[in-house]
Every structure is written in structure tokens, then in C-alpha cells.
Image 1 (cartoon, rainbow, N blue to C red):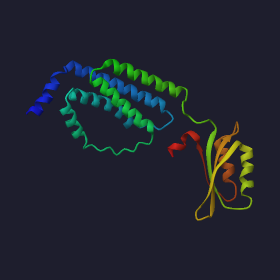
Image 2 (spheres, rainbow, N blue to C red):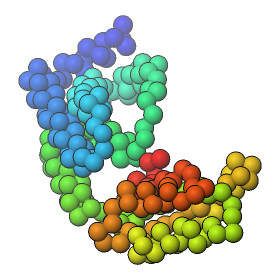
Image 3 (tube, rainbow, N blue to C red):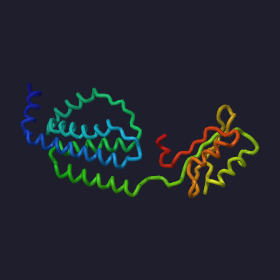
Image 4 (cartoon, rainbow, N blue to C red):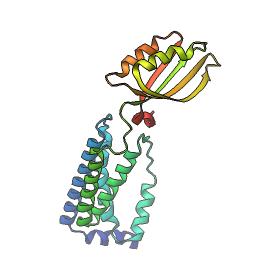
Length: 227
């Protein structure tokens, strides 16, 4: 009974008006986080489920914080109850994890009623995220690609594709070479930069036309880590 009474006494400390304000603020903060996530990841396919998760997560965490209050007993009880949940979604981008923690922190600040931290902290972080996206912080050099192709070994290997390199590339650097398919093919890897006015399809078409050439792939440098 004392355990149940601790929950009841905690709910009396939070008025219905406080609950409404905290949840509405958590919804607003979670919505703002999801909007900025969408804006800063506009070059990727959007997952509507993830965007809704950010909003829901903020409100649920705010509600949890109001339930916990200042009671350590309730905190451990909720941790035990939530430990049965298993999340099996594979996170492909580290930024997604950061936004999940961002939504959690925003919901926690709204749930405890610390509106200054919730509003000012969230607004400042969102502004800085938009600023980093505007200046394209961390993006790779434009026109730089990772080129891979497989070629049947012959005496004229270098001559065959280096003529294409001279025509379409302003620079190239060999990254590695290895045998594949039990030595039937040699796989070459280059870091290349296209000449002005040259598009990727032109380079791929001419390389693919070389006799003995197979599996030509051209990957933008900034997208290399996603594959």
C-alpha cells in the first residue's frame, strides 16, 4: 500500500493545468525537432515513422517525468517496467541517434516544468543545427568520387582505362588493387575528381565499354559511409 500511495501522492503535486502545459510544450518541442531533422536530412529518403516517433517520444518522456517526480522508488519501478521493451529497428545514420536523444532531453525538460531550459535550450540547439546544415559542415568535396571497377588481367590494362581517365578526370589517385573471383578479375579502386562539364554517366558509359570491364561503380565521397 505504501508503494501505491507514493504514486498517488506524486500525482497530487502536478495539477491538471501543469499536465496540459507540459504535454503541449513537449509536443511543440518534439515537432520542432522533427521539422529540423527533416530539413537537415532533405537529401535522404524520409521515414514518416521516425518523424512521428520524435514527437511521440518527447510527449511520453514528459509524462514519465511527471509520474516520477522526485521519487527514486518510482524511477526504479518505471525503469523495470520499460526494460521489457525491445527495439529492433536498425539505425543507419548516427544523426538519427542524436535526434532521438535530443527529443528525449526536450521531453524531460518539459516534463519537469523547467520551461526556460526546455525552450531556450531546444531553440539554441535547433538554430545551431540549421546553421551547420546551411554552411554544409562536414560534407565532402564536390566532384570527388570513389571509383571501383573489375577488369580481366591483360598487358594493356592501364592503357585501356587511363585514356578514359585523361578524357574525363581532372585528377585521380589509386587507393588499392586486389584480385577477385579466384584471380579471374582485378578490382581497382580510385579516388577521382571529374572535369568541369563532365557528368557521372559519361564516365561510367566509357569505362563500361572497355573490353573485359565489369562492375563499374561510382560513389560520391560524402555518401561512402552509408553503403
